Image 1 (tube, rainbow, N blue to C red):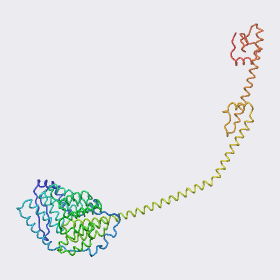
Image 2 (tube, one colour):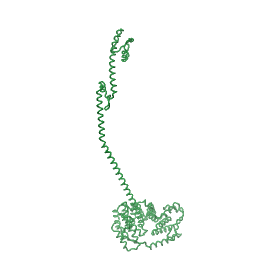
Image 3 (cartoon, rainbow, N blue to C red):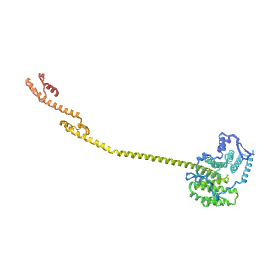
Image 4 (tube, helix red, strand yellow):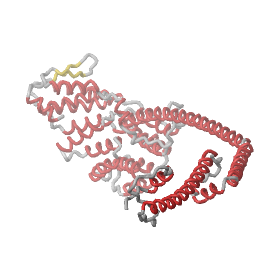
Length: 522
């Protein structure tokens, strides 16, 4: 932002007009030429003011409000007021103080109208005006004063510090961190930037980093009770109650000078002092209402934080309201009490919705379990029905099996009987060739048996014909040889005759000659 304002100053003249309205409230009017981007951004910031962004609240976590039960608060936050009378003190804002602030507003505004003042002087006046508006609770106007101070002097670390507080209390933590980083970059000796950034880191969900900043701020003044109190809050959030209590007692005992107020808060947080005793002491203290209101603002805030740590959210909610009721707007406790109230409301709404969602899910699970049980019962019934039918049909299956076995044995007996009634030649043939025998369980083929018997008869006839033909051929050959005066060799059973066959030769001889081979001439 500082670089953007420097760029703006280098590209145009900046004039800020402050006009006092009839009701005495200052209004900021921007009547100067600026770069379009800077103009749009500044007007956007001015118009937003310190409105709590619902989106920002939804995004950022509840680091300072951790709820354990996850359900609606019991009792609810809108239940009757829960703080006892002994712990309740109400104070009215001091009218004289508010009148004094309004007089300062008039003086500083008149000083701004002086044309002879420098930019640095104008920035200081705007800064002081911002503080006064902050004390009066006019946060938006105070923020505008700080922005205009930065317009005049872009490297104004104190203005960045206040802007960081406003941004953090609006839960715009990223922008708040940038503002505090700018402070420490411009002026590393600005101690309160460490303190404010540590608190912003706690509420932004980065308590461990916040402890580092608060320890550095504690080193600047170890006798300040409220630095120790904030360290207790962050250390309890990170390390737990036992560690935080041990440390707060150790630091409390290390305070080596008398302090008007604050030791009571440390004793309360460490468990040595009850809340009723602390409030009773404040009621009896010989102080004016302005100082009593300031102390009550701090006391109620730390009482609320302890109740919050212990899970007493309704009590914490009411105590935060009591802290705000003091109207000490310039204290960080007042500003963060407002943010804690908004967070508690938001978290209760989320918890209620979450509980409703869990209840719906529970009912849905019950319905699904019911449907699953019903389906299981149905399938069990179907399985039992199938088993019953199978048991009833078992005798029929056995009867069918016995019938099939008897048919097989009957076919085997029939086959054996048929084989025994076959001719000897066929039986011998089947014995020599097992593959030719009928298959077990099949009826023998009658046509195949007849063909086999017919083939055997043909072979027998053919063998007898061969023997008869051979003997006839021998006798005929001898007769011819004697007649023709030729010698015929009949040793191999073959006759060679150069002469033509004699008339009257048997056709059987020709057939025999053709069957046993061609006749060769001698």
